[in-house]
Length: 239
Image (cartoon, rainbow, N blue to C red; front, top):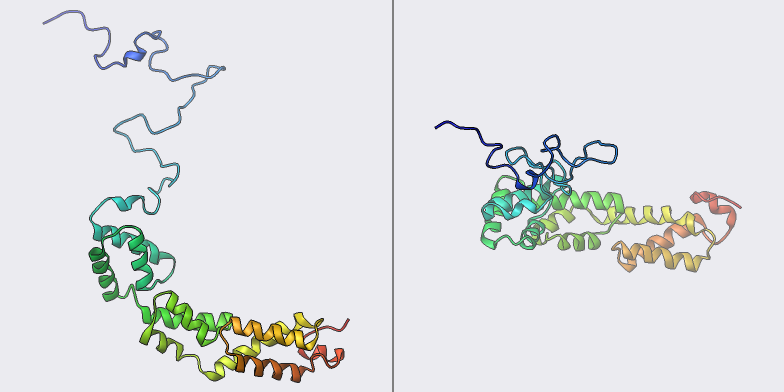
């Protein structure tokens, strides 16, 4: 069958059919006549999707993809992301999966598997935590035990890690804390300094007996409160 071809494709946008021929198919223009690009996703249905303005070009934000896939796949993805920044205990990851709505059976299966391959190791976590916090913050075993418990590490794993710190380590750490703090107290009397130093050690987990003994020992050795000329003995400066 022959005849004159249609004036335009049948799928032409009806909203554009009444536009002048020279302008058809062209986007809106600004006052200077320049084309303005419309914000939003790519108009090409077969082209790549536009970047998510929240998540960026890398894809959806953490958790946005967790609505897709079977529960174990979702749990694995969540755990791997959580472990990227730092080590986590099994309890921490279990709490995270529960908050994300992962079924308990799927969460347990994934956590068991991560434990088998060494991605979760509560004993190693506890050892590293105790070493870091005792050396860096001077925490006593009581404070360290409380921190481990808060992260879900208790029992044998916690006690083995805490065994790295003995009585002499605690006393040395307490003394170091007092000596480091003392210069800031040079303008107060001995009673006030004693109270503040013992309180500091108590907040770091030291028992009252050890804290009091260490504070008295350091104050007596430095002559704190007896003579201002002795301030240089522990790092202070004379006025």
